[in-house]
Image (cartoon, rainbow, N blue to C red; front, side):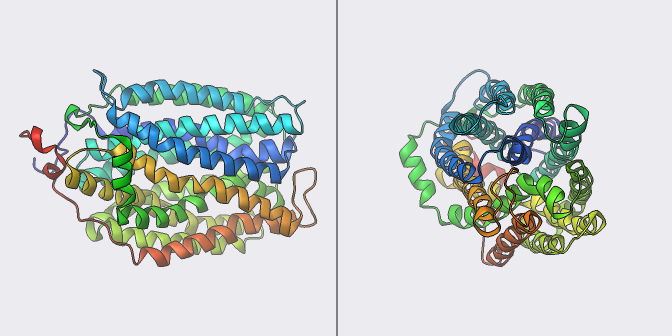
Length: 447
């Protein structure tokens, strides 16, 4: 019994299914926002880039506060559950509004609508993920148990991605709408919002939190101790290279299919679907590698495979060659899904062991600062397409939008992940501590 999860009462599958609920809304938003606002509604890419930078800055500032409030919450329902139950319907409502922009909006009116609901969606998504992610190291202290729970939740995330990314183009442009209208996006957002809310609440009500983990540390001293942690910076910066690369993929794959491959947007279903299936099937393999070689060694290997996948995708000329490259891309992505959160969790374990209190919410929100780079780099990357290739919007695509989105989807992510693969060789993380080391010293208990 010594290898079983030391914090009983939360089945791994029920915790893991929460990832399905948290993934559907944000991936619908990130996967369709450029197509919806830039290509269909005609939002200028320069305005898009400015909004992305602003929203990234706002999100970087509010994330630590949200995580800190979660850590300090004391209620009979726990620290994380109240935020999850309240945040889920709020994110769903903002997502529906995001895809309900009136088609009569133009100019500054369209920019304001886009900015307001993009910022609100990202804020509620951050709230949900900080609380959901904080439960992983608390509920599953041992890396073996944690890797299983993490692989399960990444599997649920991939199922959500099949729906929110691969199936979405079919739903929005053929089932509920057309290639040039917006009605399909609104209907799809309503359906996804209801599903996501139900799943997140179902998961949250089952989470058995440890009341001993509540903390009362002030915000600024806690934040300062995190900022002074060198591992926070090395893991955060290198991990952000992977995050930015995948954010570019999520936001640009539909337009890559349209312009670079010269196919209807609905064909994104096949490319995204294959990549997701390969990633899902590979999770069990990568988990076995983690058990044998450790999370850090496996993380470094996955980075290199992912970079090779982006290089292969650049040379694809039709759906068949894109699918072939997608196999390698999916394998690398699967490895990153299986390992990246485990690397972060090691840092959280070491912090809890060192300071004698659990600040997972604040720590993950601080890591979220690096995730906010996704918006900044995404906005700059899209703006660069106007500068270098003349792509300003769907109404003004420039002379070679195919090359523009080949660079956006392949070249930029390859450079980022190649740097990450090299930098990961120089990253070290704390050894896995025994679960007892993370318990508050004044409230030790036996198992």
